[in-house]
Length: 611
Ligand SMILES: Cc1cc2nc3c(=O)[nH]c(=O)nc-3n(C[C@H](O)[C@H](O)[C@H](O)COP(=O)(O)O)c2cc1C
Figure 1: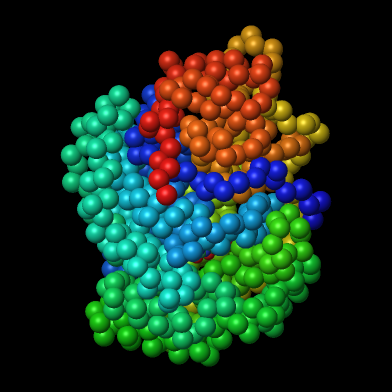
Figure 2 (figure 1 turned 180 degrees about the vertical axis):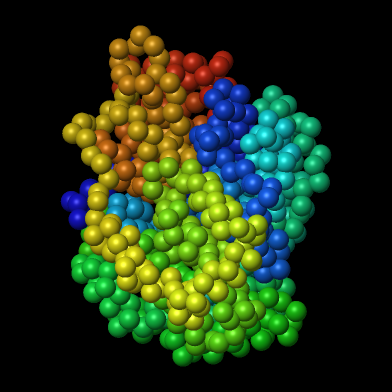
């Protein structure tokens, strides 16, 4: 493992870590990026997903049509509106939204994401206030509806991009979930008419009227009718039971319970992670197993909650899995405990699927059992294992860690292209018949189910991508100190940032101070110092701290420390940083076709800072 990198030096003072951009600003960015560089939120068109009309990748998510079986897992990719748009452009159709919980002024320590090898994080909750989360999700839903109708990209996303589903996620105890604050959030997601009418007036004037014809669109006020309960670590069984019943009874929701890998028991988990997969230095936290739901009770609970939902005309599902609690032995992130995700979690979650489906014969909705309890999945999904994972019957396969690797949201469309090819090459036009054929061939090879077959492979001859030896390689480094202008221009800071807080602009020709082809700038309002760009930047230094930090909110600019440039109406009006950099940054912004980028970030339209 690499040397621990020192923590970031950008204190937040008392300011919130994220300030969402207004709907008008986001529309301004979409239009400007599209007209000037054929990108949306820095995603190039080659990474947009266009469905193949002959291959149906759709499935039913708790009874709702959903056009593809992938999407972001609750996490940094499903928190801000532009993140959700990026996921949709990449082909996601199921969005497990970032978990909302009552304590919404949490201070998450930094850095909070470490994707250097496998995946670790300490970011366990939303960083927006609860009302802000509602606005973001409604904004995202409106943006998707507008993009579906936006002629310039029609050819690239297809005439029918297919249905999508927003799945809420809440945590972490009954008291918090039944509080008025969270209850108002849930009812606002069920009927967002008021929120939509608050946002609608921003559309007509945005981007010089480029979206004015969509200002009267009949936006769907029903943003979500399903919810995944993030039980997190240490949530007792009685609490899981009472929260699920509360969500069904009070909010009339279809509910999924997200389970933890601890359900497998300490010996099995430590045996897989430390012995089989070779992560001898990952200390699995034994105490977490005592506090979490135990297997026998878990089996009973799944059956009971399914019956409870069914009797009330609702649907119930499970999700495998949340992260694994381990001791923080790396020291890159500050907390004592951290949460493991990525390749080793895939082996744990698939083993759990196999074990649970055997213990609940005929109950899970997976091939070989064909029961009614839907199984959603998130654990180490990549382009290479997506097909085998979906063949096990999980619906959908959501992704988090893989999208935090270089390429970011651009990694989604290749996953779907692979899946389309797999179906076509095996002579199928939909997931159901393809899965049935996979089950038949698994059975012919002596496996009870496709899940059992997949587990046999990933814990046997196909172990390498999950084993320590397949995950030891560290991100590339070059022996060069990162500077404000010029760098190797790998673009990693842009693609690994889940918030699209970085943007790049072509260098100004003939300006000596600006070596390198591309210059990188940070939208400070969107940067929460998660540390992911620091991990992947090949040069020495933290891009989020060193690259020019643009502010549009004077209060935020005043409250933060470190270099920064305050923009008002596209002009730099104040700065902390070397004076000679000011004209250079201004020229860079002005080089953007009459400066619409900076104008889009002007004070009146930019930061939607209301708490
Ligand atoms: C940075 C980060 C933040 C996350 N935040 C949440 C969260 O708010 N709620 C939740 O239920 N799971 C959260 N997760 C867990 C993911 O939703 C997912 O279940 C897990 O990471 C396994 O998927 P993966 O291996 O593809 O990352 C988070 C994971 C990461 C890496």
